[in-house]
Image 1 (cartoon, rainbow, N blue to C red):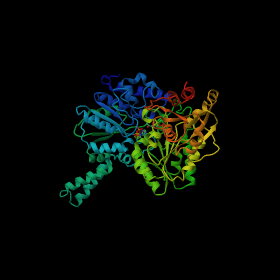
Image 2: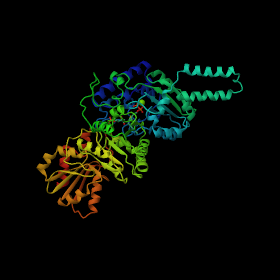
Image 3: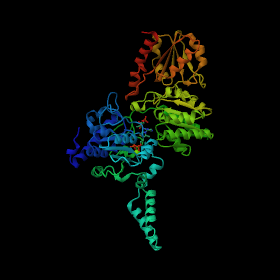
Image 4: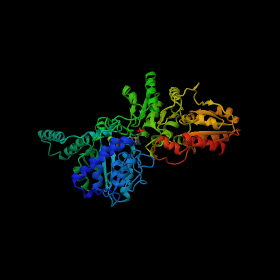
Amino acid sequence: MEDLKKMSLKELEDLCGDIRSEIIEVVCKNGGHLGPNLGVVELSTALHYVYNSPVDKIVWDVGHQSYVHKMLTGRRDRFHTIRKRGGLGPFTDPNESIHDQFISGHAGSALSVSAGLAAANPDKNVAVVIGDASFANGTTLEALNDINGKLKNLTIIINDNEMSIGENVGAISGILNKVINSSFYLKLRKDLRYVLSRYNLTKPIVKPTERVEQSLRSIVTPGGFFNILGYDYIGPIDGHNLEKLIKILEENSKERTRVIHIKTKKGMGYDPAEADPESFHGIGPFDKNTGETIGKSQIYSDVFGAKMEEIFAADEKTVALSSGMIKGTGLKNVWKKYPERVHDTGMTEGHTVTFAAALAKEGLKPYVAIYSTFLQRAYSHLIHDVAILKLPVRFILDRAGVVADDGKTHQGIFDIAYLLTIPDIDIAAPTSKEEFSKILDMSLDIKKPLAVRIPKDTPLDYEFPAYEYGKWNKVSDGSRYMIIACGAMFAEIMKIKDKLDEKIDAAIVSAAWIRPFDKEFINREFPKYEKVLILEDGIEKSGFGTEILEYVNDSDIDTKIIRKGIRQMFLPHGKRSELLNDENLTGESLLEDILTKVLGK
Ligand SMILES: Cc1ncc(C[n+]2csc(CCOP(=O)(O)OP(=O)(O)O)c2C)c(N)n1
Ligand SMILES: CC(=O)[C@@H](O)[C@H](O)COP(=O)(O)O
Ligand SMILES: [Mg+2]
């Protein structure tokens, strides 16, 4: 581990240069959050120079910008393994290092975490780094309100690069950017004093004048905003000036919680990332010389985006909502074309869901494009504001099932289970590109909530003879066994179908509908088979298979139901194929496991 305290400023600056090159070198091979990390090289170095981690505690919101922190805390030699299976994780995790104070991945939790750490350790310093977009998250704002400047050992650093993944949105980012240069502010103040003195009012109304000045500050500066909330505010500071950062961090008034507002550049030091920070926020492997990504293919989100363009053109009541994930969910072109009908609410999942519910109540047709993992943040809103009133909100649950690279916090494996517990929400998991498109057509005129879960994967091209709401499709016959493949599992079963046919006499069924599931099909077909295996890419416990098992158990059908999904655990990071393989859900491992489960071998 580097002993930063022994280094001169020049040596520290050289270290920053080396770290930058190393990050680019590794991320161009592994993929990762390049832009956010290049932006915090100096900040991370200054923090580790000033603070004595892990005694002092450094906390990162989202944690996608913690690569430099990892390199400076004994993990530099393993940095080349980042995001690889068994390698360093994508975000912070106390199981990976004692320097990682908490789990991270979802925005907004870091300030609450830091409040807890600071309150529990009044004699220790706590520093938390929060991005300008994450700062507007509801949980951050709740913590800001609660802390109220009272935690003297807490320093809040706002890393303001004026970007979320894409353009930052909303009033808080507006306040952060309302940084007046002092000459503008001083002139306003001089003018005010001049007007008052002209009318000989300065003396009798000194207090009111001060108040007017204060209000003026609060209107035009982020400093005023934080002062009113009870915090000391310092900034804005050039976040790439190492010397200055160290100096500011070393000063510690200990009067109130400090907010240090720093300005950084996403992608700093790598031209393609500086030029296109949105693409380089989180990127797959790319050519270091040109910045061009390698091996990109169409995914379900692209199909969604293209279909929404059609749907928006055909029906002017359709609207779309995204919590800061316009590009990732495929909505970029629709947003450009129909800016007034696509709402980017920032990272505000709870608000987004309730906002959509009200739009639906008023007769609009909302599509909430949201990652499966982030909908967890809005679970109560889903029940309270959408399901109870049965409002026809369409949820496009992207990154459903097994998610590559982002690890435990980003897996979309709980949604079937958590949605099935809520009454009145229908759930679809298209098994092919064509079927997804047809389900989106059907979604236009629904009368109740519908969640459509799609993986981050290339969709299978497969046409079924018919598409009906709530109906499954049998694609091949068998006599003893039947395999029901839900959503993304249909593509996996089709990849091994020939080998499977050589070993086992099983009918194959594509099941895109989880709720309503195809009762008519079950009643008609299941009694013909000895065993039916239900395949899904969500947790096995309380999932689709369990739902079918319960139905069959409560009926007169004697067929044995076998469930096969993901173990109830937090899946780590790795490639999608590696993780599916670990769960025996792809290729040879799937084949072997089916044979074992069905034939009992
Ligand atoms: C609750 C939640 N919603 C959405 C995301 C997806 N997401 C990850 S980083 C990010 C943007 C973060 O912007 P900012 O906080 O300004 O940090 P920066 O990347 O600019 O450093 C988003 C939308 C998330 N991680 N958590
Ligand atoms: C940190 C975070 O939550 C996002 O940046 C996420 O990693 C994006 O995932 P995709 O790259 O799949 O859009
Ligand atoms: Mg930002």
